[in-house]
Length: 115
Length: 112
Image 1 (spheres, each protein chain N blue to C red):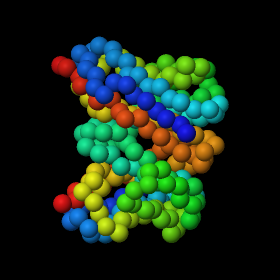
Image 2: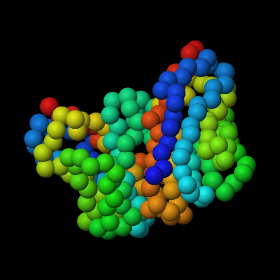
Image 3: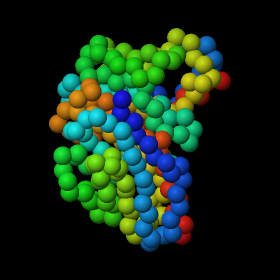
Image 4: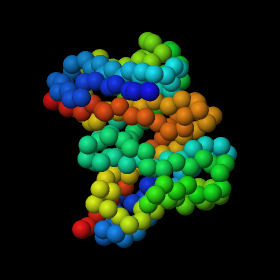
């Protein structure tokens, strides 16, 4: 069974600085998708970035980028030039392409941004 | 465009009462549907997922059940609620060629 682990329950970053959130996963599959979702206080789930496992190039979306290490089963999120609006709960997620499209989330990392 | 509707937004129920939460997707066909629960300050726990009508996979054996009576309708139920069923429930959908998941607004359930 696939599992997703986020070992940092809470993180804090100074505004305009850079922060990296960690995520590791366990799978025996070779083809899958990885995601980072943001959940602000409104509780609405917002997609931040996604990575296809077959792509070697790390995904980038403006200030957000990932470090995808397939062999190490690691998928970290880097937030550059942190803004107050980045404060939220961040979830790493794994989507299987073979096990009935099962979508599994980690336990989340709460990010605080200090002004 | 596709939309997902989840209701009610807030629910307060006494212990031992039944539960029915409904999720409906519009603008697509044959979606994969998911129910998650989020306890206060915790992560998303996958409860059930469905890849088609009548096809339900249960992740956590507990006091809840799910049904998919129609292609785009996913229902989460309980015959008798427990205090531990309190939490924030999220419905989501995906499609085979759409890799990301889209979420409903969620239901905050408080069992008293």
